[in-house]
Image: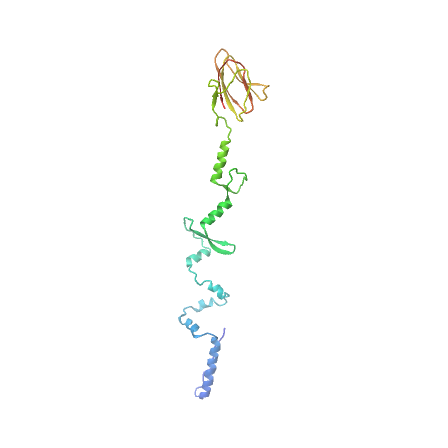
Length: 249
């Protein structure tokens, strides 16, 4: 650090000696102060910083431009401390007008919650009515789930769904004993036949080899045959004494 030195004039010396000594002192003072003007020196008039506080600047490498970044900063100490590893949480109900700080390709910006919502929706969800991608990492939208379920329900071929009872008595169907029929509805049907005199209900996969699945009662009592007939299966009643015939199809 630069030092200032001066010479005390000799007591009783000549005027020339005093003048020379004082001029030399003023020259030394001018060199010590450098280019400081009166306005810059006046700044020190109200300085309250301690030596320890000023020593913090000793060795600082910040440039004028870097220090000027702080010019106009209105952040409070509490706000700056949040950036300094703050861990205290605040219960907050986020709304569309709220903002979050993000690094946008090297530039720090405030991002609206609506932008974050749009990004999250695009990145994490998928809108496929047929779920064809079979993704294990994305969530389906409500609309796509509903469309998928509605389509699946519409394609259900369970017995009774979308089917009605049709009877010979009402003229809905024409049926007779000892005649084979084939279920070609594309789904199972239920056949209900009331017979007498030991008449049986048979089914076949090819229309030639038959298997008895229900046998009537001898002695004149009516016997109900309730049989589920799968799609493409043949069926028949072995006799003509039929009291009633109905099919759920």
